[in-house]
Length: 479
Length: 95
Figure (cartoon, rainbow over the protein chains, first blue to last red):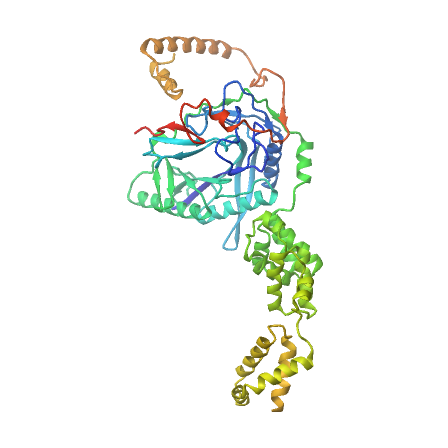
């Protein structure tokens, strides 16, 4: 059987204010402290579209090569659920913002193009806290801060052929949004959410099987596990001669299975009609071109360029382009220290030791600026400090906010390259290591390494290893 | 002609409970609306854009600027039930 998956991804747009009112969108504010009559759906209010949300939607649409429709409209989608007090959600239905795009994904080194059917704007809904579980709760608590936050929904074509591809799509999708500054893509905080339609069909068949909608996948891991489970469940049911029921199932991450939602939990009779409170949007070419001109290089393009322009391994390029901030950091450092692989190594091992590759904020505000990293690498290059000491200096830069030269000067970390001084240390070490000398004479070259180690230890790691090696060899050969 | 069952379905979607008399009255009214729609249908509207708004306006938008929200207490004041800073709503899933 062939697996057929389509993903619906909801992303909160990075605006300061909500979709249809001026309430702030800040995450984590006290419950119901960021609302007004508009986002709480009071009668008689007038929603007004946030221009920035439309711009961000177009930005994403262009990145996915979608056709931006010259005119689009908002619609009311009706359903009763306490997360949405006015009993309809303002969304787009027959005339979405954009259609017919695509996204490249990579799985096991092979790339595939996944179609994007549509991209539309809507408003987010409030957050429910159940007293117990949804089924057993006698009551639920509601926080409407999230209600009205701008959301972009993107529906892929059913082009994904495995759980792994679905996870790769979501990752690539997220990377584009984060890179463009369209969304922060934070799945834990719910800024990026994903539902999937899953069905199976005989290999070679053109028809789609009965699809099941999977909800409640809140991480990349969940997406992969939930879809793997669902594909297996459907395959087993079909093999046993059962029919697949079209339904919505929830992923239970703790128990590791999908379960059917009770029919009362959803209703598909939405009675869409044009939102009378919002006039249509017409999007002229000039506006689209202005937004296109402001588009940064996309992650994929940048990744390819990092390989060709800097000669980096694809692995490095992949990591360094996880976010715009990181890619810019790397390039700024390379401008001042033009050895890309060396810079890449330091960025990946030291900079990313304590911050995430996609943590734009942390990367931009790191006390170890690209210029400071370059300054540190210059000190290694000219022999002022050893690589080992440089790691300590990096840590100090991370905590302090001084540049490398200042730290090295103040703390006396300069590499000892004074041959006379090193010679004396080596003599002392040799004097107390007759055993090692004997081993060395008998051909155990490892003994020389141990001696180098002793010299490094005696100098607090500051001895120039090249000089120590040479001097030691000279001295040993004379014994 | 719209049936009793269809009226019941629409009423259920709108969370309305109708008595038998109300149901019959709604059925008659809905039918007369549909009859009127049928008269409109008879018109030739070739080349006429479907109307979604009566006013000839497009692109009414605002800048992305934060306006101070309403005070929390003010927004919670009319809540039939609340717990601390939250609205409290009765059981969602019917047992």
